[in-house]
Image 1 (cartoon, one colour):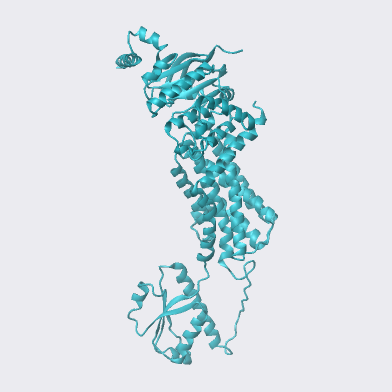
Image 2 (tube, rainbow over the protein chains, first blue to last red):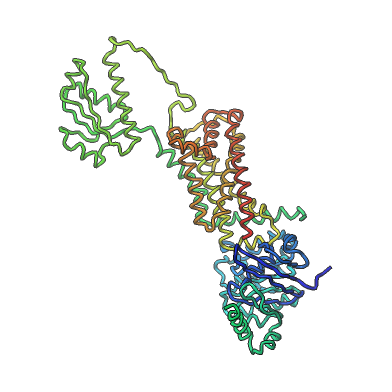
Length: 248
Length: 375
């Protein structure tokens, strides 16, 4: 049974003490689409991703990733997802190749299967010339590619990218999005959070988050049409302004 | 359930990476390989209770044959060396303030005459009490020197009621190094297992790599085991190194069973690791972990274990605390094994304590570690 939705979430909530970081959100991500999570810092994007990756237990609600329950089947989920955090979780004192070897190793990929996985992952990201360099010596753009490659080695069905382009120069950012498109073409579902408006335009569909809630979901074209705006930036600014006015 | 076949390579990946971290970081190399050797030489040579050649200021007001003989015999023992002579009391205090000597001996004007007429002879010793150890030793040496001289002078007229013939077992020459250097094993192992493991675990969280590891199917147990195993190995290597040095350089005997000592060392390492994991489950930064490890492991192992300072001489409250210091038990074991050749049967209590302590703290810290990953 293959789900037609990669991710399905209903009334998902996470509280930290009295603070509600994610407040009853519901959405579906289709197989193989690029789904964006747009919102300001502190809107609840990272908390949502962590719940979907099995890093954080939700307080209430329901959620499935690749058909597995995010409350009870986190081990199965972990075998099917890739995750790249905003921090580029790499070991600076290891070479590029050693980082790859390590992240393959913790998925139980070694020897011949590692070489195959590496060839496949680097076919996208092209890291080969950097293998022997120390990770702290390579430019940020390469670190970002390395972080992406490490999360692709076990060929995940869904890839969660948490602000993957933070601090990276515009050219590297565009290059990175080309990679995301290539991955999606291969059938990988990409779930990406961002607060860059140009990146929002690249997504197949996106949801706009504010204060732990989803305030709108749709393709960039739909959203622009619905709110009568020319750019995603205008849609976003308008929506958030409206929400803030409602709250006041 | 996950197939068990995955366990081996996953654990292996963590192990391999940890070794790379250790061997690429000069700081950890220094702590693991240089620091223990430095400790052995520092403590083996520098910390010694066998104090010799105490510097002595002398004021001989009598200047008689008797007073000169007295001084010659005193310095002939090798415990005292005269560094300054005075002709009056003036300047003695100044000399002591400038630390030209730690004690000053004053022989009064009628020393020779009083000695002949066997009146009481008032010899004065002024001691610099700012160094308690040397002061105590100086006073004790001089006291026993007095008693000896008294006996010699009264020979024939005086019957000795007791005759004490002390015989010191296991360390007949009372060499401090025999007592101190094996104890270093306890301090070194605690340091490497608790300090380095807590820091390396906290570093994964601080840099965000822990999160990346936790989205993989790896289990927290494999992760922790893979990270601490290298330190177990290195800690045992270090203790072997310290023991070999203490045998070769300080001629400390090794009379007991090495296999039992290894078993005891493993249970001690287990205690140290449990403390390390406990610290890592609470500390947010590497600095905090390092400070916590210093306070929770290094200082107690040093001060509250009987390593240098006898537990019996501590205030009662601190004596009670020492029962919770693993080093206290390990010190008993290693000293007994090396110096006395005692076997497991006599040391079963401290051995069981170590196992118990490790198990209780490990259970608590693993639980802490798990819940901590959640938020």
